Length: 426
Image (cartoon, rainbow, N blue to C red; front, side, top):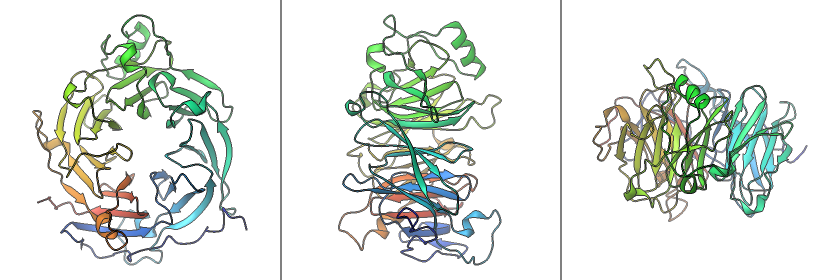
């Protein structure tokens, strides 16, 4: 049996038994409908859904080979109706493989068996395939070079399935590319040398933007200031439109059918210009006839800004997270919208806690926001193992269970939790 397949069918170690009570109270008073606590052999900074019953995780250590695992969720978490005790109470390894480099980002290509990963020491991408179930292997398929790889930071990535399987990738706004995964053909490259001092909409681009319900103003940002910025996140808005969030907080929007450079905005307050930022993109404005995404930006100082892409220069709302201290590094900052819980988002990366916020209750004027729930389980699960509290490295919402999330931490802990609706933080 290959080394990659040797752990298939094995269970991820549970540092505490899965809890089946209708309501569970963790240390610190937080109340849960469900709480499952597990331990990975190595920590992960990625949690990527593969369908509705499994996730992929991967190690990110620099000095060793890192496992990439596809984990089947416990049976109880895969059913849509409450059941009694289930025989399978742990994660089960479905497939596994090894990467010779750290995995900082991992995306599944929708409706395929392909994964794309990126990570140091360069900006190249690695393509993987979830092999047949009886093999239990995640196998390396190819590498996508990006030219002068060694001179670029690791690439942020997003995937989509349009006419062909494609990956959006880049480390700076002016080197963002779209590549066909199977042919490795580059089908789009951001123009690094825009003409003129500012970025303007052309008529065809403006027409497409208006069809999406978006209003993007010309001269939102200068070419020199926004197009060379390092990227903290990339997302496809549709098969022709992509969005980037810069480390400095600017948003950049582009249409692949237009030759001009991405449109940038300078809506980050000057007082916050020294902080680092990440973004989370909602699937659309619920209750609206227009499927225009809402963007949440999170800074390393705890500032949250919500932006409607129909009016980029004017933020919808802003608030400051109630975090103990600003993040020393934006490495693990993460903000994400709940897929089926209107107005709610999750924030992590400051410490061992994941905070849930209901943005509908935020005043337009700003101020400090109170979380509706805080999961502090990673702090408590790591107390017996080290004098240092673990840091949450990533989190992900369940695709259809409204209040269920998965979260991982630097000590290798992996939690699945469903918080009780009636709970309010004190």
